[in-house]
Length: 374
Image (cartoon, rainbow, N blue to C red):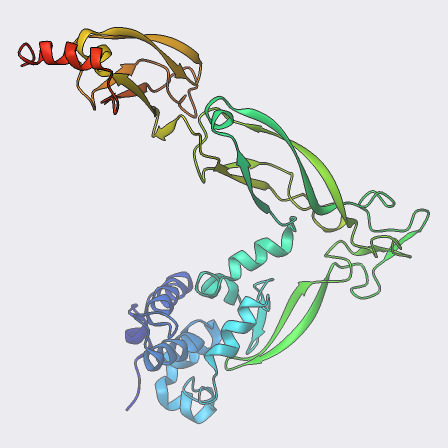
């Protein structure tokens, strides 16, 4: 039975080449075998239709002679799909085989990277090939409770990739001439071919010898071996923002590993571990502390000194204060991370201690008050 390629792609016979290409892209995304909604048989059928209708010359022949001419002339898209390996295809895309996006297929210039880049990550591969950046560094730093509340400055030592002090990041031995790359002959790209079920693809990839620049030093730096960076210990001054909390992270741009051959450095990410304090407990933006009162202070009231993160303050205790009562000291808590002028509160929890030993005089007084206590 003959196939209607127009019907397979869902386009009319008067559709433009752009409309055909658009329809193919949409269906290829929908039925690609690597997707949940994929259908390998349907995908092959879509490709078969596009091989004919996507080529103006073949489309004319198909419109004139239909499937009969197609089979007789040997350009049936159904032939040649049997040995296709989807893993090889995905691997080719992921390794940058389609970086340039242009290849020759049956005499037609075709952009596979444009069609399948988002399926296999090809767009991301192209982006990485264009710009190399040093790796990020992630560390955890232990700080004191009050350093987390009010912020601080710290000097840390990092063992990191740093700019080579001999070649200043160029990768060239000082005094060495810069020559045309012998691998790519100054083009910055190299051609490679790869066999897939579509046929043999001729693609261009970034030259690894010159990193796409087309130039290289006649002699590489003997300290960094042409990388432009060396391992080094470096002191970094960091500012801890007021109000930072446990496991929160700050980013310090450009303080990660330096990239190869003078390219940008990555970032430094610092997360924090906060040492506990024997007096204070953090509760979000508030700080909890506890004080003890004797039964006289709790019964008659008193003025007591309370330690806060800002220093001691006087707290007035009203009479008949019960154990467990919480007093609030406004704006004595944790500053907001992005607005340090705004702070939480200090929560002072009271515990009334019952004396374990009483003198005869104290016992007598309590006996006299026993009848008065409600």
